[in-house]
Image 1: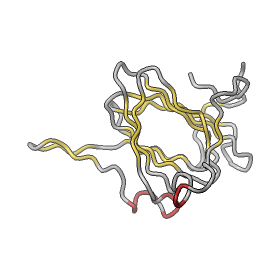
Image 2: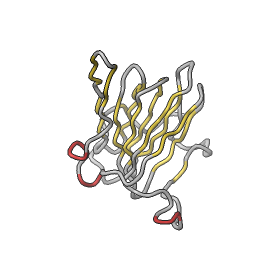
Image 3: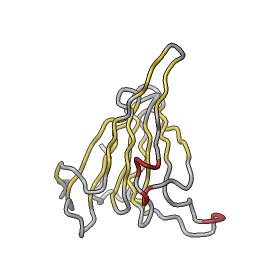
Image 4: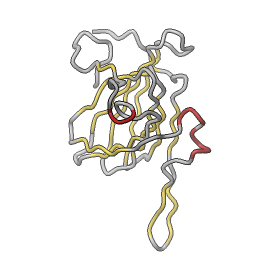
Length: 160
């Protein structure tokens, strides 16, 4: 099925390739600083997930939540993003990135940008996320802010 999306940057998506600082003790890599993120993206929680080789998570999108992903390894992800926001100046654009041990990356994904990732390495990969909204709200009493597309085979959002 042909996709209505074309390769290109997506408004509001921020890709920061992270640099580690090495010395005789090992290395240090800053995951985030609040002065790097902007007031709307400051995390309120954090989690880590492991994805096994060949497994995808997503695609999905959020109505209000901004995701602040950190991909530093072990393993590698192919990350796919689609701008389906009608009001966006980059509506119809799609991005594909490789992130993980070889290219440590902080990826900020704003609300309404469909996103998913697949572990493309021979070893499991870790994804850290520091979203700006609590999962299921305070006390886990609200609906999940997630629109899932992975079960819809007719969706234009298909993971490669």
